[in-house]
Amino acid sequence: MKNWTTLPHEKLIAYQAARQLLALVREARISNPRIREQALNAASSACLNIAEATGRSGSADQKRVYAIARGEVCEAAAALDIAAVAGGCAADTAVAAAACARRVYALLSGLIR
Image (cartoon, rainbow, N blue to C red; front, side, top):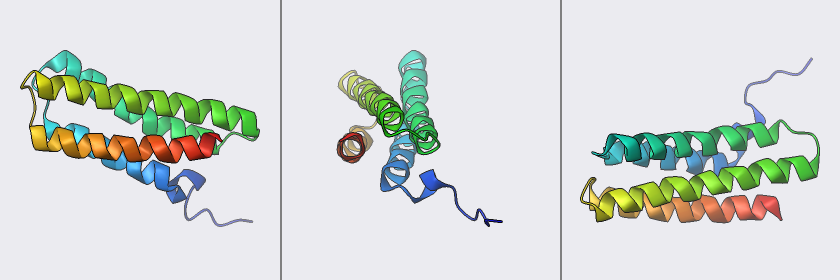
């Protein structure tokens, strides 16, 4: 019997980076409630989709779910960008989150190939 000390998604750098993005979205404290909720939902969904993909057995199915996660990363980054432009969050946090989102996007692109 296997001892499941960690789940497959916990080992992925993409998952760890997506969690960091989620933390940055939360840290940004976006003032507009609709944009804040959109950003938090998208960042959370990115993490959840990465985890889901690791549980899929077929390569094509995994890639499809990683691609969905990549789209969620783009949505979270755009929401933060919009909030920053509108003056609704800390610009420095938005810049850090954008850099993190680019990293997650690149990592997911590698998993999709």
